[in-house]
Length: 125
Image 1 (cartoon, rainbow, N blue to C red):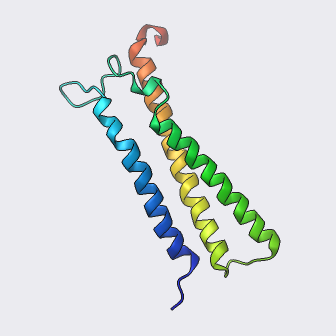
Image 2: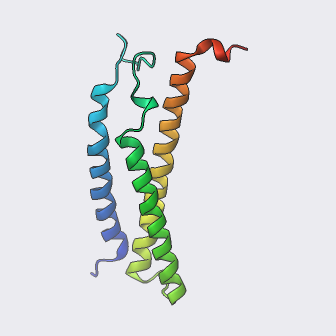
Image 3: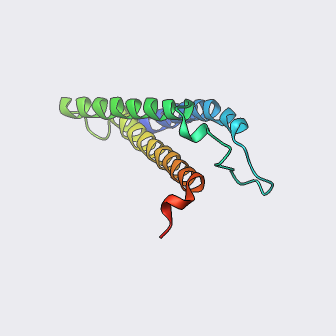
């Protein structure tokens, strides 16, 4: 049974994704929580500064762009879905664009929630 691009791409995505998570996780020590375990945005500044999380989002975006460019290059060359290289690039493009999107939306949600909790009188209706 030949190893196709999906399997290799899954292994690569697992390794890179785990590396990114291991880089981001230690930031939780800097998050101040209240007695119920919720984030206290009035005392936590980490979401309002450039952090490793932002750097990882940018690196993940660049990696995704390179995967899309590689996919385009091989498609223009005439490869088909049966090619392991095309399978690899399709899988990498899908996985890392999804990861980038989810991380970016999560980061923005934390920032907006922090702004709302720090300056609540600005948002009264």
